[in-house]
Length: 359
Figure 1 (cartoon, rainbow, N blue to C red):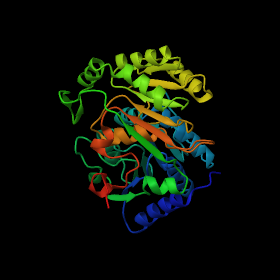
Figure 2: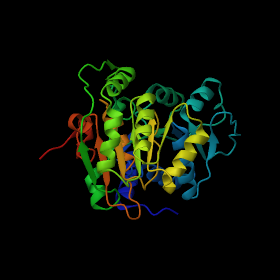
Figure 3: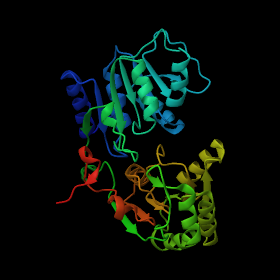
Figure 4: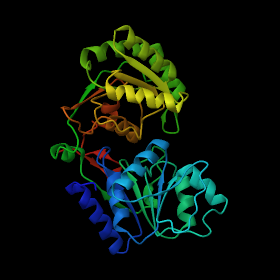
């Protein structure tokens, strides 16, 4: 069994209280690395006689959630691409969001309905979530570290009751997360980068970093400030990612590049080499914003930029988990993210869009 931390038990009790008081749709916010999946698994465990539909957006989170559910004694029935499980007697159905959306259209759930729906990373795929909630009339919990969206759509329309968790610095004080140091060294001129759907346009952003030779400079700066730290690096394009990887290797630093076109098996092998220390830096484009769970990562290299608070905090959150011998997390910010969106460990008011709290 997993031993819950005091703030995680507080979150379970807060959800119980909200439902007892008649609320039916709640949004539970817990910072990245704070263990929101563990909290959700405990909620499922306590509902021993109820049917639960647990929805996740990605393969990585699907695998991690299955493991956490099993750790509290729950054997979930799995619904992902190609799977057609029998639903008779199903107590907990763990479903990929995209697969679930398809099955809803084909009447897969005529003989089974949940008593509770839990939706992880609820700030994503809102239209799919809305379709699920229209299909089933039951209580629902949204899980997220960042209950905000760039397009301005409010999660409150579907989950009107927000339960904010502890602040990042509270979790640092209790040693549930590690302290974070942020080093801001902008490397690209972002003034002419186009915007699309509220964030920087990917092609325009990539061009700005390529034109500034940011990748070569970033490799030198990482060697100066981050050497010997286990690092995941984020980039705006495959070209910048590959260039940064080559520049690190030229400096004698073992690094690998992966992106969305990399085979799943090759990605897993690269992650394994990062864990064992065969490589020091794993450089990526379009991956690992969510779902990467390697607690020994102690440096996040942001050789990109974003206008999204969610994306910024998720990137930094890849390195906030504690690990034996780990003192802190170093965030190297080349995209002015901290200046624009606030430090990753800033106190935030989630009732007001996650804006930093000062004073």
